[in-house]
Image (cartoon, rainbow, N blue to C red; front, side, top):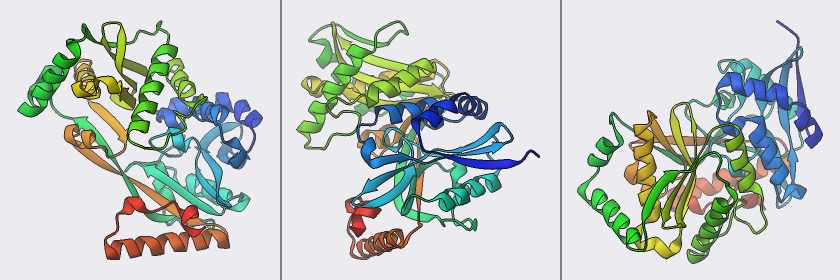
Length: 374
């Protein structure tokens, strides 16, 4: 076997230079777009808060062949340096990228290198699917930072079933669900002709993304919720990530139109026979017609009719996902300390969680580790 060596990417220049090798590894592995070089690079180039972030991507080489990537970055929170997945704010699932997913030993050696190089106080890696390669790092005796299970689990709902057609799936829904769909179609259709369609590859995405952003900002304001990196004024994050999906041939952008106006948008992508619903929103002016629900049911039926076996709602436990989902996976997380400050934050985090569990406080109220210890 060729000699093995590791490196840590800290600069945008080096990140760009390893693009061909990383992209070739990603293409061979069949990994999700979230672990691709294009995705991580687009996130880093568009991040508006890079002054508090730093790249910490670990590469494993055997001679001149790239065999592993741990896409990591650090972020400062209240003076603590937290190691997390690179592009975490734009990604629904986190994982390592390996030439051989069964090579747990390589992954553990990469993690040992991560701890030895340092530059962080606390590691927090979340949104791990049940089959994530990175799970091999849990409690591994690598001599580095020891990662242990953390209590911050998240839900991943999916639609899977034996339906031969989209109409068969629709007919299998409850009477109330079918009525709500038809009622929504009727309400929207009273204002103009109603059309559901997949945007063609030649159609410009800019106007649709502008509408999506305007809808989302209005919805967040109505519900008094904070904005995210995708929807902040002047942010280029969402267009950058959608461009990656388009250039990789994965993008499926669905719209619901009333006359000439877009009233709902769903930015999706397809990988491994699965329709993945990345961002969906609707015009609040049409809320009585539930355009988001109508569009979602339309693209579920479209997916089944086009031979896809799964519709994945990605990360989150919003109510509609549970109503339509037939499979629920748990996305787990893990945490480990590298410095005394990190150990203190980890201890505070565990103590607060135990207290809340004992006295019945909701887990969703718990702050992030570094914030908890500040």
